[in-house]
Structures are given as C-alpha cells and as structure tokens.
Image (cartoon, rainbow, N blue to C red):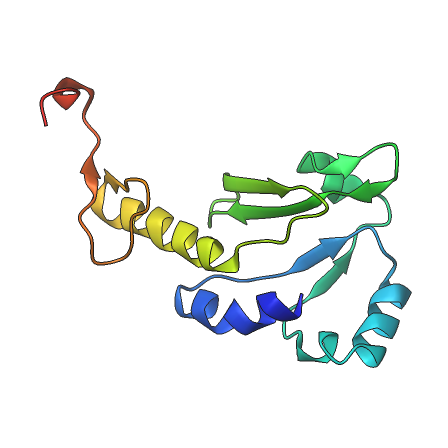
Length: 136
C-alpha cells in the first residue's frame, strides 16, 4: 500500500480517489498503520470489508479463504466499473499501469477515441468507428 501512496499524487492530479479495501478488520488496519513504517505513509482511506459485501460485489472474494484476492478496480464517476485487474498472489501490481489506465480512460472520455497498446499521454488515439476497420 505504501507504493500506492507514492503514486496517489499522480492519481489525485487526474481527479481520482484511491482507497484500499480488505477483509481485515478496522482494528487490524489501525495496528498495521501504527506499527508499519511503510503504512504510515498511506494517505487514503483503508476500508474494512469484514462482511465480504464489497468483495463479493466486485467479484474478488476467494470464498475458500474468506479473503479478497489482490485486485484493483477502477470505477468511473457514474459508479460503473471501467477496468479491473486481478493479480496472482505472488505478483505485485504495476502502479505505473494504473496511472496509464486512468489517463487512457480519461483520454477516451474527452476525445471519443480509444488508445492503442502501449499508448502514452501525448500520443494519438484510435478512431473507434467500425466502418473504418481494415481501412486505416
């Protein structure tokens, strides 16, 4: 979570809000934040999902363990999930990709264009018109 805190300023600049949600209790969150040097840097809400309501709704709950899998969910201002990344337990998140996803989603909203693979801000988008498939 400390790494997420490090990119939070970039996400805030994109008018995004970050929160962590886990099936741990609020008491666990409090202890982790008070005792972990890296978690002391967390500057966003840590939400407890002890009832599993959120994890089930986002389809990230491992019913066998009772814990959410490592996932990142991107929700637009209308409450619609626009992207969701699920990570294997042994693989950490690519947080630069989180920023790029938000930039790409916002670019698409502003221009009506899609973004190609490996797109970076400042590069052109793709006109999304089925009539142009194979012609451009």
